[in-house]
Length: 72
Length: 288
Image 1 (cartoon, rainbow over the protein chains, first blue to last red):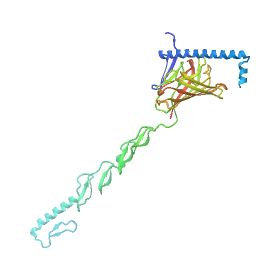
Image 2 (image 1 turned 90 degrees about the vertical axis):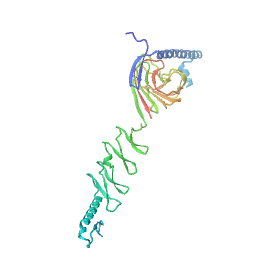
Image 3 (image 1 turned 30 degrees about the vertical axis):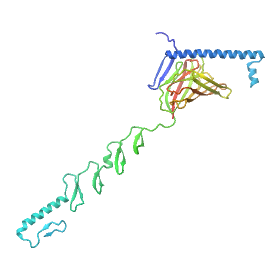
Image 4 (image 1 turned 90 degrees about the horizontal axis):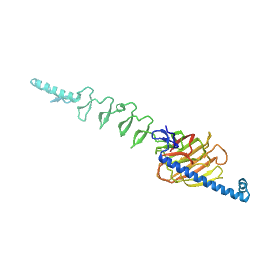
């Protein structure tokens, strides 16, 4: 049997009280891929922001903890 | 001509001729027969008689049905349904369907309660009371666990997820409604001491926490509350996440807007990066 290539999902259908575990269908898989792409973009943007923050702190000679103390 | 005192039967006078005796006796006999019949009109087993409005004349009343009782209708005796004859089946109860009229109400189904419909007593299923009713329980699996075909008979939905755990990578707990992955969810999150207030618009899910679902066994609890989920209008949604750690994102409350007027028929429990669940249970309650 071919190995599963798509993530699994669980469906609990309350009309029949049946629980089905299956691979994502096409629509679900497309959504999953879109989620992954969006998450990658969000992480990249967060990283850029983090790096920019670190660069500023470096320029003024403070650590993140020192800045937190000042702002606190 | 002489007559008898009570019934006025004709009898011969003292001076009547003997030769007319036979005729006089016959006349008297006929009178006696007629009067007797008028006083005893019964013809059938069980008949009873009562005094009619005509002097010296009784009226016959045929026997009633089994269990009937003798009552009075328009001033004369009459057989009518009694409590006994009205009750025909085990469990029957009796009521008045009109003034002085007995009626039978057959027993209802198990669990029914006696109520009033159209001014008459009737058995009916009790109205659902307020409170929480468990409508689904199960365990988390796959990247998304979807509870589908949610009945539309409650006012609100309350979902509790406990001990959610992921296989390979920690991720944030999220929900999707009606399988809708478009970016129409808005979230406003506040953490335990308001050190984090985070507003996120146009997300593709309800993101309930800034704290991850971990890879290890835990007792964290996730709650989703959807008000008026059957209504075709924007529904207020609140979700909470209580971590078993202290500080930081240990407790979160999120106010969400699902910008759709569609009634909610399914809820997907997932994470922001669609990680695979290895443990966790859910209970979905219908709330009235």
